[in-house]
Image 1 (cartoon, rainbow, N blue to C red):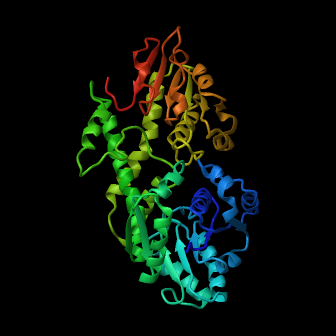
Image 2: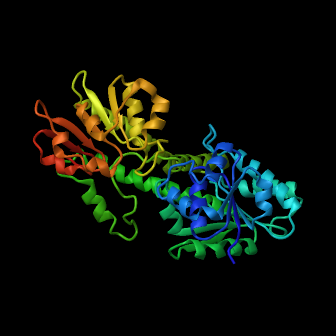
Image 3: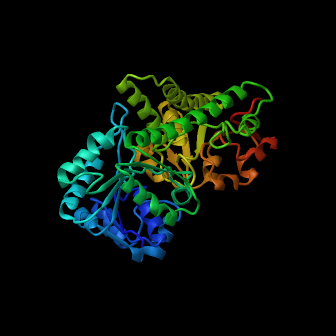
Length: 439
């Protein structure tokens, strides 16, 4: 029997999860306090951009109900996932405000509901939050006990915007922090109906699961930064190529190839803040976190180094073109994105900047306004620039003909952060520079 599921939070993660579940034949009730999101989804129009999601809503929308009434949603489902925002505080830890607001509503529903119900927190939270804040809130409001009257789990997803559907259906690991074995078993039992693969299911107590979540992301950021460190070293060594070096390193089973790509800084809504959160946690409990701190410091330095390289090649009064504003392809998110941060830094340095991105212009323009010349195509961005920086590896950038990159009067400088247009290096009318390669 397929369990009925309610999802609190219809944002960039919540909506794709809704779509993935209804596509697997689950009946889902989506809950949000934002009337516009609710109305949009009632019309089966996704309020967020994510590849495949709109198509899934169109095809499987009959399985979806959307409401502002969280109490009714819990009373009419078996499992509730909480997928609300946990914004970072000034100190670097995560705020539980929206999670606890959701738990307040869920607790009221549990108080009125007979029978067993499972509550699963998907939002990323600080270690200790389940035991110190979330469990007590649910128990106090409901008048019931976790592990006896209702189940409680921490079940974060390891997905990336732009590939949420693929990642959700094909996880490497299903991580479950559980109040009791019954809760963990129930949650684990639904994943065979969801996943296209057979992931490792790791069940543990709350604090271990909470720590595992931010530790995984922090380890990945360290691996990315190590590759970027090698890239900066290779750039100073004639004949060195970071892709050759990391390609060999990745064959060692102790290291592996994933995320071992020398390019530019990592970004997005998860990696930077999870790294900082682990350092903040360590400080709060009196432990050392030198590696996490060094990773964050090194990562933030990369934008300044790239801006310095741009200025090195920029003629007096010259113009810079930046191709790529989002933190990755197939996403409209500019949060901590290298391209967006580079544009901002160049603007601060009083440099004339033109920029293009297939999806990132609206959010960038909202922040930067007329400080940047946003154009409608990659070709236009190239045409207006003396130095072009390719910061996001969108496929359409590779499809621009070589003739559009070149110019006759003086070679146009192309700084390729990802090596995706390295066919340009043989063109005498282009000064091609690939990050991570020594000259």
